Image (tube, rainbow, N blue to C red):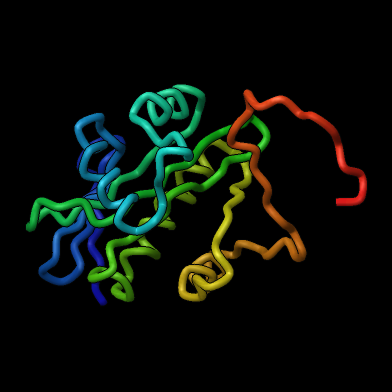
Length: 170
């Protein structure tokens, strides 16, 4: 498939896939409502995850970035790549492509643009992917991400809750 990439501005690229116009660009505040609806629809966001516009802006100001993939001819957002920075490594969050646009190369392009920005920052990228999400695992493996093995992820969402006792047998 012929792909023509033109730099539109410093942080925006126009990608032409045949007759389809795709733009990969930096997140804008006015994108949040549409993106959040998509995240909720695809199970990427919920109240307890604290995915808010304020959090996004804070992570960007702390050295992260957020790319949006837009189907320009339809005027719709079809994907996102939110990358945060903890000064040791970057973390890829909420990477997605809308269902009807999957398996068309858009995910590879969005991931490629994300990796290019990560190279500019100079930090490795870490991510999490569900066990049952085989297509996305293949995408990440194809981009040279390595499986960490028996690595489990835990989170404590209610940080205000008191710890009554520590159970050493768990």
